Length: 324
Image 1: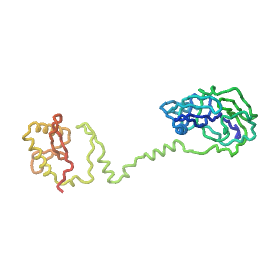
Image 2 (image 1 turned 135 degrees about the vertical axis):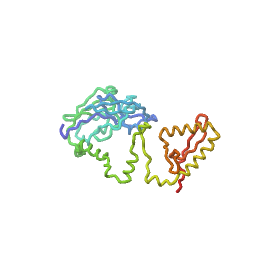
Image 3 (image 1 turned 60 degrees about the vertical axis):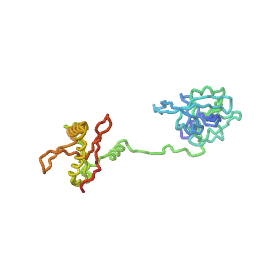
Image 4 (image 1 turned 60 degrees about the horizontal axis):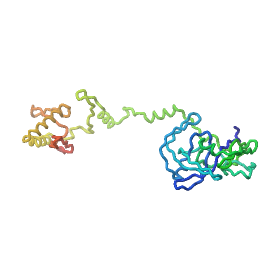
């Protein structure tokens, strides 16, 4: 097709029923090759039409697929006859047809007794609807006029006379540019950029504090406990906690006193401590002043009798102040 040739598709102005029962004018494309009727989302919102979910895959040339998610129901009426059709429309973002520029029809000899379905078919206006094969043959009438060589044809329909076909001539404005954007990045360049963004900084470039965090949070496998172990991080030496032996001893005595008068609670307490030791949550240490073994619990704890279903509840007091 030469640079001056255009193919004009059949369009018509129709009356479309909105949610209040009134009719508004919409521009429709008439397409005998479409198995689905369409309406743009913008025009559907303008009419305040209700929509319902209706997933459908629409295939076009080149096996490209468009996923349609919603559908709506409305009626269209002709401006030139009594034709009225109730149709389902798939809701789409855009119906891609309109002349690239306004066409000069001043030399065309359009008969006066042929009311056009779209009086402004030669202008670059948006398309609101698309009528497919479902209604295409319902709107056709007997009558056709050939406007001349290299000019489109007028076809009579119940929507008015539609204009369609090849047109060879100069438009009012200069032809639109054929290429709007040139983008030459290759797939390999884009992948390389993605790798650079996701690149992990080498450990040798990490600061001292960062290295400490990495070493502390390194996950280790404990074969004895059959679990993953992450060590508690200390920004400074644990010695900064101060002397906690006396505090722990006082807490221990406060726990032992109620156990002497409650045998059941004492058994639960001893069972818990045994389980705590077997799980590795409590380790034995040697006090320099005596050879007797002691067990050190990471946090001071308080034992509280609870409900009949849970006889023992251990409360850890991590907010206990040290000797400093």
